[in-house]
Amino acid sequence: GAGVSQSPSNKVTEKGKDVELRCDPISGHTALYWYRQSLGQGLEFLIYFQGNSAPDKSGLPSDRFSAERTGGSVSTLTIQRTQQEDSAVYLCASSLTSGGQETQYFGPGTRLLVL
Amino acid sequence: RKEVEQDPGPFNVPEGATVAFNCTYSNSASQSFFWYRQDCRKEPKLLMSVYSSGNEDGRFTAQLNRASQYISLLIRDSKLSDSATYLCVVNRGGFKTIFGAGTRLFVKA
Image (cartoon, rainbow over all chains, first blue to last red):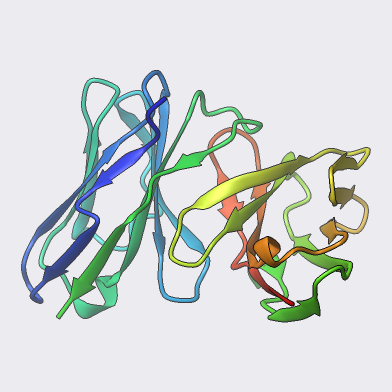
């Protein structure tokens, strides 16, 4: 079946512009996660959705970052007024539920480069 | 101190070698443990869960030591295709999952 998909796969933008990153989770997965991975670094948790609700936004680096999920499916991560330090790979993952034992299935990521 | 710590490596081993990675975690309330594998410029994928009694999947063996708060991954008879970054993952319960920065493994012919 279809896995997690993300778009765009690559995005180059100028400092100060807004960007939107999209994630399509596996159908039927209620939990959705956004992570950021900088070059050579581990995954940094950004935000989690259970259905359309985001009970924990504490991982968002600043108020320039926001995310929403609609219909319990597609999610969009928006970065306003991008800065060069926002350059990273943004990974989305989904799992069947938010239980601790659940496997997270990752999308291929969006590589963001802010010039 | 990071909540999940791993030796970044790289570990350079010949084909057929046995290699082991350790990972330590600081939160004693952690409940679930996993190893994920990440190939270069690819997304992470689950390699195996780690159970309290230890578990084995083919050439891979995972162990958990709750008293000392570490987990380990042993790879026997290394293959070239095992070359990747291995991520230690700890879940505190519910959605809160912490990924280690990973240990890089290079297996050479």
